[in-house]
Every structure is written in C-alpha cells, then in structure tokens.
Image 1: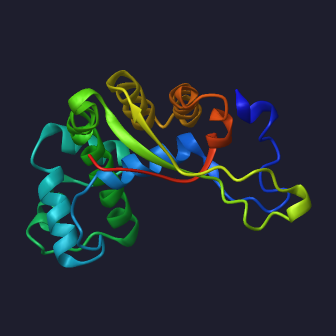
Image 2: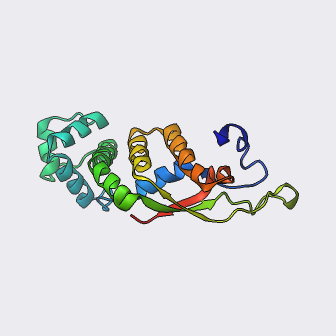
Length: 194
C-alpha cells in the first residue's frame, strides 16, 4: 500500500523509522519470555536441555535445529558429564526459543485479544534530522485499539516469519486513524501493555 509509493525513500533526507509491521513483530518478540541464563553457561545449558527433553516436541525442535547427537551424548549433556560444543550450544538455544515461541502463541493471542483488543501507542517516524526545507508537518503520537481478529492474524504472521503479512495487517489496522493513516506506515516505535 503506502510503502509502494509515498514511503519508498524513507530516510533519504534523514527521517528514521521502521515499517510498522516490523515494529509489531519486535513487540511480539519482547512478549516471549523464557530462560535468562546465557546459553553458554552451565545453568543455561542445563535449563535448555531440561526444557527440550521434557516432551517429544522438544526432541523435534532439537532435530529441526540440526542437533544430531547420539542418545549417549545427550545423556552425558544432561548429567553434566560433557559440555556441548559452541555450535551445539547455539543450536540448543535456537531450538529452545523456537519451541518456546510455539508454546506461547495461544497465550499471546489470548492476552492481546482480551477485552475486545489491545490499545497500542504509535510514535511516528522521527523527522528531526530532516532539513527544514524538506520536512513535512509533524505528526503526533496516536493511540489505536487493534481488534482481536487483527491480533490473531498478526501473531500467526509473526510465528510464520511473514514480514509482508505483518505489514499488510499493520496497514489495515492503521486505516482506522483517518486521512493521515499513511504517516504511521513507518514508525519510531509501537508500544502496548497486555
């Protein structure tokens, strides 16, 4: 939509921002919490291994991440008799976060759709570095309630890694802002509390 014509050259004169869909994706990513221990620490490795070996889905996530070790090696990791290589630690971390995201999707959708949707605060792209002769009028921060159906679609697009889908959903949502909706196609940030 708007990105195709009006915002094609965002930043050419110094404006700073990101596509609204990308900002929604970052916000969703921040909602996924989990193990805070570093993936290369003994506690981090142990916690990730416990989480991943607790279910068949965890084993599938490890396999999908490319962890191809024998059962004996896996048992040695679990007993802390051996430490995974740096490459396998990175794969364990990837498998952990992939599985964690899959498991929190229903909770994310419920939290965001509760009470008829979630109100978001939108800060437009920052034009402060744009020379005055090229600057358009300043647009202010806006608030908008995104409805449950849009959140469901956004969470699904985010889970699938569909950046274009997230951007389309964002542009459909901001159409409710009225005639200056396209000023919010690119944003500095988007925030919500859910």
